[in-house]
Image (cartoon, rainbow, N blue to C red; front, side, top):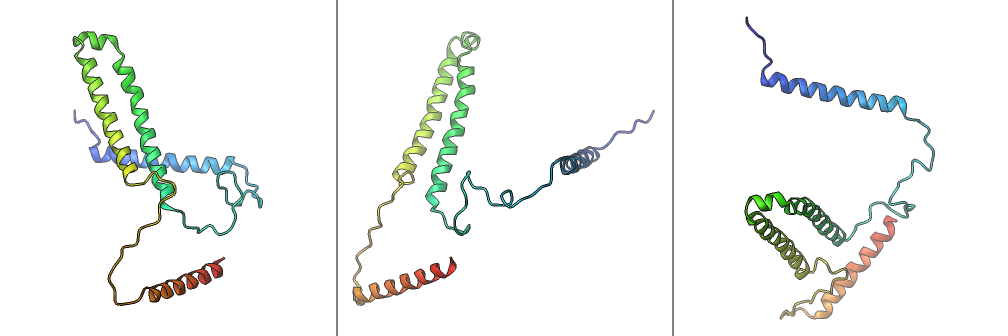
Length: 169
């Protein structure tokens, strides 16, 4: 009565092969079913419903990404409040623990919201939420090189950057 069992690695291999076959079948089916009639409008770049203007390799200010990440963090954390509210409001759990469950979950949520407020205060104190950042204060240094020499170098550098930016477009 020798029974043949697949080893754990065989099971994993079967899942991998089955997953690959599933993906290939799905892609082939979609290739056969979908219409194939490209035109100039369908082949253009689509960005939030707006027609693209200019070069696509424009550098964006990193503050956009920081604000978006902060929004996503708080949005996801807000999603954690809904399951907590449903469990916190269950009367049978509160009665079964003599009210201890209610106080524990309330304290837990205050800690959770406190950590969120701390993160928001940190982002606010660092200036990540300021849309327009103040100009940096240049430190005063005692240099033997006159200030007008620095200004000439900076002006020459800015002129070179303007020329390179105009030739890219």
